[in-house]
Image: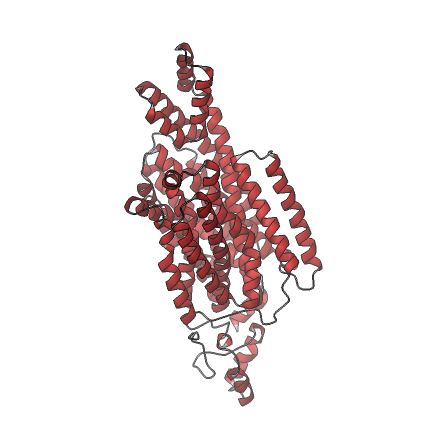
Amino acid sequence: MARAPAFQAGDAGSIPVTRSHHAYHLHMARDENLSDEIEDIIDELPSHHKFDPLVGHPQRNGILAVMCLSLVVIVLDNSILNVAIPTISQTLKASDQQLLWIIDAYTLVFAGLLLTAGTLGDRFGRRLLLQVGLGIFGLASLIAAFADTPLQLIIGRGLMGIGGAAIMPSTLSIITNVFPPKERTRAIGIWAAFAGIGVAIGPLTGGFLIEHFWWGSVFLVNIPVVIFGIGINAIMVPESKAEKAEKIDFVGAGLSIVGLSSLLYGIIIGSVKNFTDSDVLGAFTLAAITLVVFFIWESKSDHPMLQIRFFKDKRFSAGALSITLVFFAMFGMSFLLTQYLQSVLGFTPLQSGVRFIPFAASMIVAAPLSAKLSVKIGTKFTVVAGLTLVLIALLSMTTLQVDDTYSHVVWMMILMAGGMGLTMAPATSSVMNSVPREKAGVGSAMNDTTRMVGGALGLAISGSVFSTVYRNKLKDFPEIKELFSNMKASGVSSAERQELLAGISDSLGKALGIAQTSPDQTTQNSIIHGAQSSFVHGMHAGLYMSAAATVIAIIVAILWLPTHSMSEDQAAGIAH
């Protein structure tokens, strides 16, 4: 396998180093010419050490492109599947419970393994972990694409989660390693933009594939990207790992897997059943106990997987909490707005995906610009400005009605994406700049874990509030009450009326499907009008929950996020 190109001793404009804290002294040595002894030491170093962290890897922009491509494929997989679910349900004859796990098996495994994967990357090599993750993800995509039963598809999705957990923290930790501090925020901004792009283009890609191919193509599309990624990583990306290999914290890894998986399981099941259900309460109790034990263990271990002292740094804790809350808002919004575009405004899945393009474009523009803005006004004020735009967009969306048009929606989407682009990159940089380079994998994994937990909470809480309001509004909607009064007067049994009410209360999509099967035009109109109007009320309530999370994020950023994400030592390094 070809080694990644690296600076060699004597290259113009480069200073080979082994540790970032020696960078200043090596700069001085360059001015006085490196001694033969230092050159001999450098020549014996492996190639992945032979570039100056304060200058950056010579091919860092190309490496960034590869990392962004690897990131998009795993983010895309989350949103692309939503479009294919109706077809998968019909083809595989999957029950509602099976459909839930087809969607969430990936998220559950992914989130549960993130911290462990980041630790393994720091110890054994981040490029190695990325390659292994891509390989697992590709093979799992094949299993999912050619699944004959719901169980096979659920297994394939779970295996894809293992691959995704290895890929995502590796991409960010490699970017942190190859870019110097002064360029890192811009690079992370581009990385964050592609994360948003993956979410936005998922419905577009899924809609196109479903219309032209079979449902398995939404997984098969991953294979060319995986093959290309493995090949180009081997050629271009340098290996990096912690210089002092510590013992693996098996206890910490096990506790984090159980704790995070239980937390996500409780959130997922609670959003479908009820948050007071015994299974949900049991999952949350197990998560709470396990995570408390995890933090106690990590604080006392001599080789902790996650050093608790990181949380004492406000750049780490406030940055991570800001990311959690902004993803809460984004996932809650995208869940509701996608349904609004399709089931209220009447767009097909493909048409709906096309209409998310302005969202992606706004993210592409705003995320890289956040780096320049952070330099001018600081990390804190950039994040607060971005969150304020998000809040304005969410509150504006609460004015949407059944008879609105896409032209009324699109500027809100652009504002939302722009605000998120300004928020995500500086907050992520704050987290990554707070951890030493040798712990970049763990820092990246923590950042990714907050995204997953925040997104899952946004879906669960905003979705739960939406469902409750939707059902209550529908039941009391004048046309629906009149419809059921007429049915009772016509001799329709109570059981049949209850069955109809349960069906249309389950979801807007199901209500529209039931309406279309009714031969009576008045009944159709009553159900459609009642369901769409009730959906809009529920959507408003869910968006208010996302807005509340954003307000909390603004308060967190104002009170605790430092003005600048780099420490004094890092800033001094750039100055030198």
